[in-house]
Amino acid sequence: MPIHRVVREAAFDPEEVKSIVAAYEAALARLGLKDRSDPMAEMVAKKTVELAKEGERDPVRLSELIVKSLQD
Image 1 (tube, helix red, strand yellow):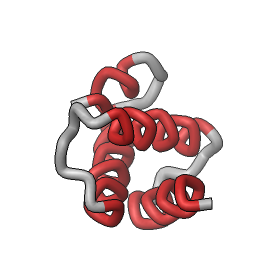
Image 2 (tube, helix red, strand yellow):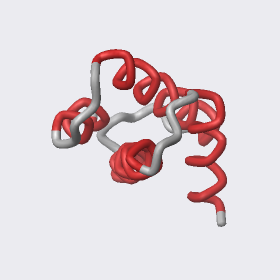
Image 3 (cartoon, one colour):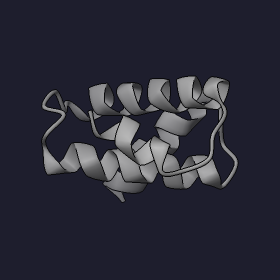
Image 4 (tube, one colour):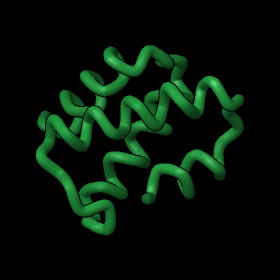
């Protein structure tokens, strides 16, 4: 799963990681992505961490931002 590799590269505490992974999983589901080796899943992981670094930690809002940013 690409999110764990991407999250490891950033500095988040365990609770933040749970929220970030939940947002990532929700975004993948909303985008209809099931294959975690799909390059789009990697893009979603990177966008998730990027937005989390900007301060958003709520999984629902974070997943909405991820999907919106990738659909624009």
